[in-house]
Length: 151
Image: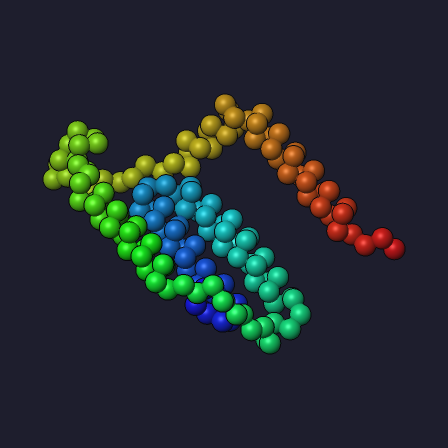
């Protein structure tokens, strides 16, 4: 929002998506982290950059943000920060698992979740997975049919 260049904002969004993926890795959700990178960085961000670069007059775009209200934004961010710090300090972090943080083995290997997700997708949720696949294929064919130019 602070950059007047759309490409710089897209690069900032790239780093934000990688940061979210890193948070997922730290939380032990490896499948969601890889999906974050593949879908958001590999798909949506690249599509956004191509859309910006293929649009007309990209170099002469002057973004005017007349709704800049610094004081209300600082008040909202300060309030959210106060709430987050209060929750952080008042949460009994070791009580959720019934153990103290000193008793937790931080060097233990985290089990990958991809095997469990793959097993569920290919056994219990196979029919809904295939239905969604056919639905998305139909949407893709419909979008290509609508987008084509009649000769």
